[in-house]
Length: 375
Image (cartoon, rainbow, N blue to C red; front, side):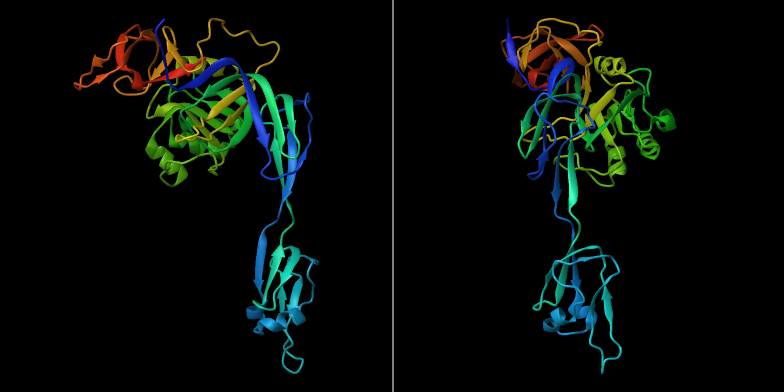
């Protein structure tokens, strides 16, 4: 059988999903292999140094830097509260003494007679790593974290912003081609992963921010709306660290594009169930896709079975998404893989394939114009 290879997105009702949960620095791992964990459970914890607050005492006391150690009311290593006096000037003939209060709580880390500066270190900051998905710990990494595994439904998107979040799926659209507007966001969607159909509008995002929605998922978004939401143009980089109050995932692309019917039906089938969402996206080397993950349970119906194609393999019957005009965003199945290059409308030659679209049309497109939908 003819076969080719192409990158693609996963839209699967059942796949083995592994989440590697690592601390930024060495710390304590709270779970062991074989433990069952929930998405919100902490699997590892550590502490990082608190914030540094410099205090220019020589300048504030109008004293030489070398005099600062003798003017201190506290010593190195002492714990101080915000507003507590740190140092006091000598004054003139013992009069007019001036005190400098501590601008923050913390520990006196250093007192410099060279710069006349005191460094305060804030309390250590706890950093916790959550499981992200409900499943089983298959590996505990000493001092680093853990690997959590589950059987899950997985939808990868084209683009996203915002980091990890967890919440129950709520459908805000009745069809995959319905625009997600502000009126579709309800107050009781607080903390939910809200799924729309086609384009999510800027009004919908603003309403979701006000309602405390955890994540919005839709087929498309307008680039002008995205700029308005973020307040800046997004360059070619890794997303996921944006602080906009929620996570956004676009499953199809930019513009008014309907969500693929298969993706919409899969998410709708898990309405009410807890989903883990991550908007982190990287489109350069080391590709990262935004994702929606739903851990499957024992009572869930078995997904449809069939021969799974080799990962990355493109063969007759494989589901693909067209990613160039005039068929941008449409989904179909591979009908033929001609071995010889064909002459395109531009007059150039390229390897092509034939795709049967959802409406029954059979179109011929360059192989570079499609993306595999892994099942």
